[in-house]
Length: 429
Image 1 (cartoon, rainbow, N blue to C red):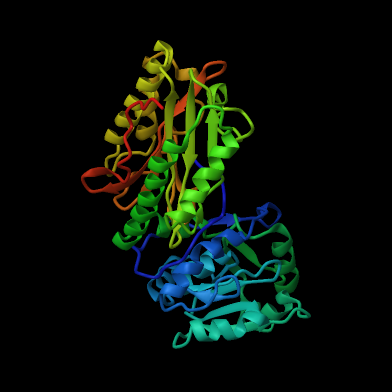
Image 2 (cartoon, rainbow, N blue to C red; image 1 turned 120 degrees about the horizontal axis):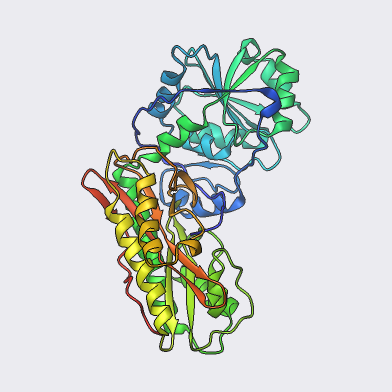
């Protein structure tokens, strides 16, 4: 399942062109956003050293090369929209479109793409040399901003000052940034381009899926070895420590989220926190974990029985297992995502546990552990080839325990391709 955590990575090959309608964003409604966490930069450190991007991403660096086709897609979206340009302030998006990785901390970072094709990267002055080396040969102008500069006044000294309609990622632009941008540029209107970027990232190329498969391979090895280390009397957090050590030993860059181990009745908490509860016979053991490898992530959940399960435990497990199968079979290109959730939910409701399935059936993943799409019963967005998302139905019965089984899915023209090979049948430890 995975908790929300901004950990991502940029790579450059071409992506398909999508042009969803841009929606207006009133100044008073600009969402408070967030910047990428340090885990993002740690997760790509090793990859940077192994590829042409030779800079340490904790300082500044690159992943591959600047992707002009992705920028052209942004320009295509501006055609006929009346927009003067796009200002991207998320380090994730800057990396995605330029190949340059930078953690600005509290400093300003922004990628400008003008309607006329002009591009400029505004970044902390201490990153100037790294950016110049990483982006050598591109047409991207690099505009350094010193610690004593007001970055919004620096923007005003460029052609951006003439812009009256600017597209931003409203989920990333902080309210304080929007207010300062308005003060510097005067009468300017903002529009949201977040959906465009999400859909660009939605359809994965073959090389991206290969990266995800490697992350899956690692986490499955961790699961296989990890359950061998389970001992009666071991606490949840002790098993977490064992699993996260194995992640590094098997070659992962970082966990893709905080590893979840829930024993006995705690397994009935969908997002429970591992603690000092001991693993004992007669209950479930739920393990939810994932890793980043070269920037792409995996996410797996398996639930085990510790000792011989009761008849009710077997019934719960069987219902979830069948729900995974039904949801996977419901993945068909051109059909609504809602049908995937409803297929799983229908099985669980028929088994008599509908009220205990309390979350959506899945979420997108790839560069981030949680990204588009959200796979729930009201999502009418159509399934497209190239999507990657989780299928993870669960039943959580207070006082008894919970079961969740989670696979990572890649959508092909023929339907769902399950990236996981780890068994889904009930395993008794």
